[in-house]
Length: 124
Image (cartoon, rainbow, N blue to C red):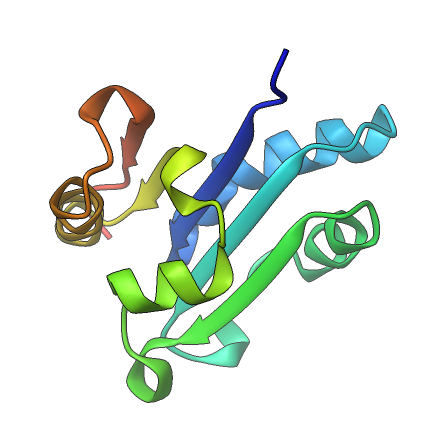
């Protein structure tokens, strides 16, 4: 049986649900194949750095992107950082416009809608 692998894509406060998942994995000392793309406007906006550091120590790949400098998610960025990107399940959480844009990028690259879960943070 093939172990599931995931890509988490967070924008700003959208890191919150992923923080809970990672804290649970850390507490249970479980390892999962996860790559986290965390997009923020400024380094001071990075939330839960302690959990993110611990997650990296249990094998979660944590990637930070400062949007003014690094830009946004692209197919090339995804493919560069996740060699098995076509096999992964995707979870996207953040502002509605970001979530919709990134979901569209994934679908344009052939990721089926069934493999993409979204969580919108509206009103901020």
